[in-house]
Length: 304
Picture 1 (tube, helix red, strand yellow):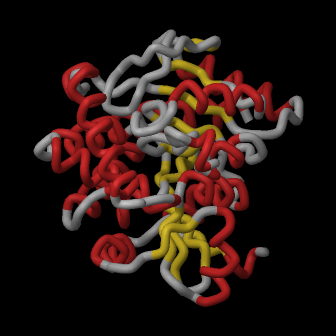
Picture 2 (cartoon, helix red, strand yellow; picture 1 turned 45 degrees about the vertical axis):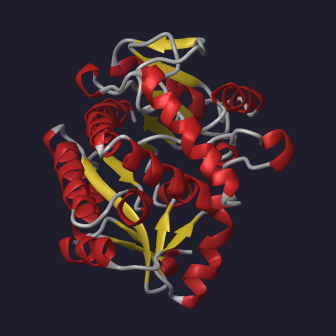
């Protein structure tokens, strides 16, 4: 297995010195934002993690290798490249075997992080059960991964283009704890709240780190969702964003957009309809998650 994994210099040194490491996905770079904002944001997020005492490890598939940590040149190349494959669990082996470029989704990043013994992962929002899934069966592989892979995902909840109620039901069935960080309700990506209450709340990072340690000490397989609301000043009006999402969903249906094409289409359409405000919110929430994720990683590392 080791022949497929390459650690960056920074990550290798961090491992040798026993420093806390935070995994980052690469789909946000290749499919989530336009160039050059994608590369700039990726660099800023990495720096936030360093500033908060941990080491960033952006994960991507390059030249038949799982890269755990990207160099500055690799980040730039990745951000500029077109036609980068969106890699989930089903795609990993093929992309490695054919030496194609692959951007890791939440599911694939979790798999690669666990292979590299990294258990804290920061992203924007997780995938989930798509609206209308009772007929389409369109359910993100992220949820299945959370049920079986020992990585905690710090996010601003699930993307609000999804069916949040069914997503929460699915996570409950899979035994995945959803811990609200300083909140009692599920944040909905662009907004701080939703109509869904959470069973678990933690007001400090040590409590989250301790919960993760106990969970994995008990061999309770699977990840955890740490739901961290978007900062107040960057949150969008619930009524406004929900209306925009409805419009975008209707267009996706009319154009018969399905499967893994739905999310990039929706995010692009929402950005267009909000005149770029949704992209600003997306960047702000990822940066906020990076601060919390780095602090959790530091606390979790100290308990090892």
